Image (cartoon, rainbow, N blue to C red; front, side, top):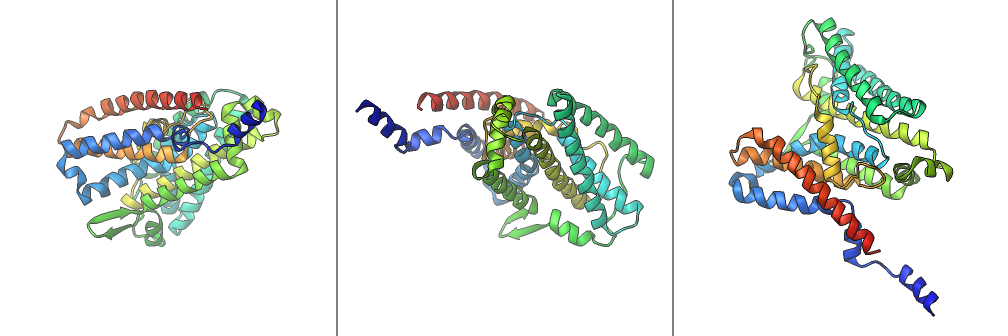
Length: 344
């Protein structure tokens, strides 16, 4: 009888509370609600439609990269080159198109190939050398930082690229990467659409595909995953190329929004992507997290960075609030996870 009872308990559907506690993004959702309520009280303009447009845009520019970075962290790795890779993507598109006097779409496609090659390089070096991803991608970060500045000054003579706004293909490329729509009093940037689409695709991959199982398995323990037939090398390389793909999307947005690119942009943004993923529930040790959580983390970033301005506070305090949120979110996520494990 006791055996049958045990089987029945295992087969019984989990309660709503247990399912919620088991979601990695629960802590981030609680934090997002708290941040929203806080700034709604201290900053009256925070709830205006125009403010929502700005918040969503800020969140989307971080969120596009936070999605693949979260997947990479679930797989147990980091990418410190993600921020400057965005700038590299934009620079390659701009300089190739300008120097070759080609249709800008040629530069865009060349940039895609170059950026994916960088992602492949990171994954390949990681799997072949067995060095920590921190070291591999830190080296890539430094190399790309130097290449971005060196090539830009060599080719254009300055630290920024030449304008390509009058080149063939620019309007259609801008429509895909940098357009916006007026919906009532809200301005919706296309980056929000890219962001939400990437979150949906990443969530489907993680929860509904074999590749998603591989990602969680590799993050939980590469040796154990390899022992049960998981293609660890291909999974890791694929994750780094996913980061590169999203860096390409972000880079094209920067280029076609402003026509020119500053070679020094992007340095430090990699930490914002990691922070959004961690706030969203990803563990630094891998094997746990979600794409939805990274989106919530990016939304918290958007609310905080703009809420401080709307509240008319000194923006110098932004980094303090960002660090405080990171610590609080990490502690809350750890508590939620312990409660979830205890309830099983």
